[in-house]
Length: 359
Ligand SMILES: Nc1ncnc2c1ncn2[C@@H]1O[C@H](COP(=O)(O)OP(=O)(O)O)[C@@H](O)[C@H]1O
Ligand SMILES: [Mg+2]
Image (cartoon, rainbow, N blue to C red; front, side, top):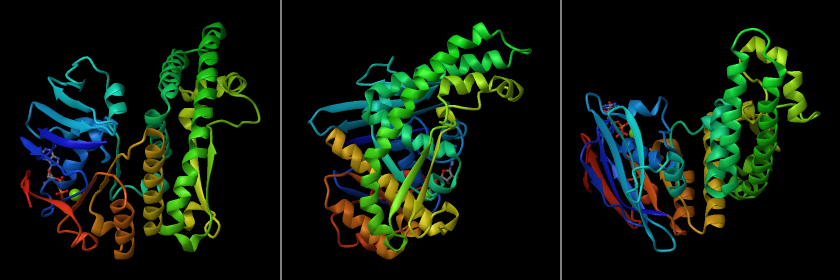
């Protein structure tokens, strides 16, 4: 998919901004604090329902402003045009798909695919397990339609079980049982979806990893489903009741899942330098984008925030080379045009004091 237009109001320092990006590589240049990363956040917001930077969605709201809105016209590979929007008005977030103001956030997110490599991306490797679950679930949300239903079913049952655990005293087992059966059924299904997704995405990641970190040898990824699989999830939930009661929440299941990465010559994540964590995250993001392209027939929009400060020159040239050869829309930011893009056919935008104009 490609953005044909992007209109942003009330998002951080951006107000009344309208961008008409080109189909290929777009470069946003400007001084620090100008609003470049915020432009990428606006695009990402439509695709994830949140920012890639820390904090709740609400911190995106421009200080003192009453509302925020991001609207986009998005061209799909089949030629169709979608009008997508997400805004916050009167304290409420509202998604729109083709003018329908009752669209759910999930329906919006499924229409929009943006991946972003940015200064915090190494968290995918070195940060908390939430980052890695979000990565997996975003991928499946966009390519596995059955996943969403199971995920909602799981979240609902999890909430119910946790409420019972917090009620005080030992809950009536006959009240816990139905929710545990729901959790186990949806949880096993989510686990199957995630494993299947990983088995498909890992070869794509390996294809990129061999180029970005060849010195580390073969790459592998190990999934941990969130409980000890020597017994099934249903039995584990029953067995954990007492402990979960003292913790006040459910301590096993796919909401606790994680994965770890390993290389032939760096078997532990702790063996990686910060720079290698970044490169590893880049290969994971490109691998996810590439699988998306294979399954959906079109590349997600790829954002590279602060490319020149995140990657050394060799890797900048490598990633640019990867993207130039494909039918993909790219948003790059920097204080100047990254050297790897000098002389390349790019659309240039200048960003200053929250205004975006032709470069
Ligand atoms: N909620 C907010 N309201 C208003 N301004 C904000 C808000 N959050 C951040 N800013 C400001 O927005 C500006 C743009 O930030 P950013 O997009 O990160 O710039 P860049 O990527 O060009 O360095 C910064 O000057 C920052 O202080
Ligand atoms: Mg920035």
